[in-house]
Length: 115
Image (spheres, rainbow, N blue to C red):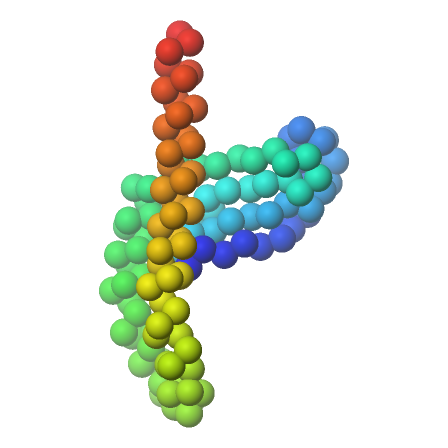
């Protein structure tokens, strides 16, 4: 799932340590945004994302079995909530990756026109 974490980083535009929103899609860093000035850095991770998603999907049964063995009651209780939410989380993650990749494409093509 795509997650947003908040951290203090030195902003390239502000030049000071400011709070930033850091967006991950799965285990990949996609976007960093300064909350003070709005400066955003995005990465096109589409190719890496597909490989990461493949690994996560392949390891999911093993991770679920581990959770089941560790705490069967908690695992069973969490299923009604987590199973329906997974497709929406995956869709959100894909949208974040796609949006960053499309933005990156626009930057790349305008840079090549300016040559």
